[in-house]
Length: 296
Image 1 (tube, helix red, strand yellow):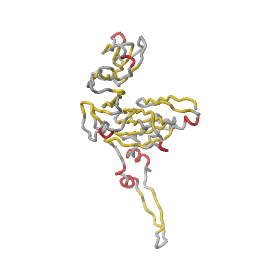
Image 2 (cartoon, one colour; image 1 turned 180 degrees about the vertical axis):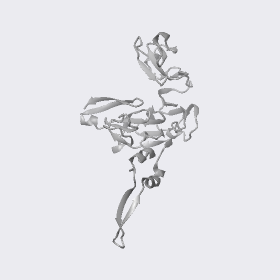
Image 3 (cartoon, rainbow, N blue to C red; image 1 turned 90 degrees about the vertical axis):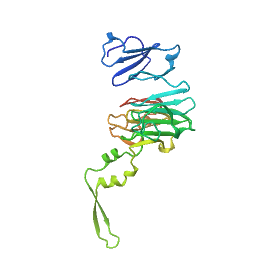
Image 4 (cartoon, rainbow, N blue to C red; image 1 turned 60 degrees about the horizontal axis):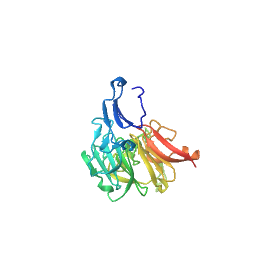
């Protein structure tokens, strides 16, 4: 698209458009479009509105896909709003959570897979004051004021830190394994073949592909969470003691564990304590992770 004139304060990208906040105006540019054609959509903001972080605006929220500007019910007061690929998660000023959009992977947290067209309260979390929310491609995460972490939606790559069948199949050996044990009565050894498929079938009830209700997730050592962010299929959480845990899809090294393996268990990123750093914040891109850290 080339370089744009003027100062860009914030942006929201998608596969087809880029939405920019520049001065007192919102602009949408089509990817690959020539600058001489100008933005494909433009909206002037109300005075003082430019200070709000996108995608929230005073009269609704914006998206980097048509229709670009979406209204919110006037009675719904939001302190934060995040976008998944096909769903929206809103954190209300009272600590309540509302979701809407597509729910074919359970990402709305209402217990079903039917789409919801208007903001709907996540009843399973009602009564627990939430302090932060994040949306992945098809999963959602929230953090309570007390530091508890709740997850729901798609778990295909372990992005909920719940047992993933796809990852278990990758961990299983490609061929049958041979085990040997001694019969207690005869004292004779007996060989048995154990097939990976049989082991997986025995554990099938424990695998979770879709978690349609919010589930409480315990981090190692009972760590309390302060910040959370989601990529398309991975999740990162910062604890109140400055530790960083990541899990989910790791094909591009986005988990920070010096490999490209995926994980359905929270693992602490060892780079930061090894270098005397405390993590303060995390922001996930679709396939990458950005960290703000300070020296201890």
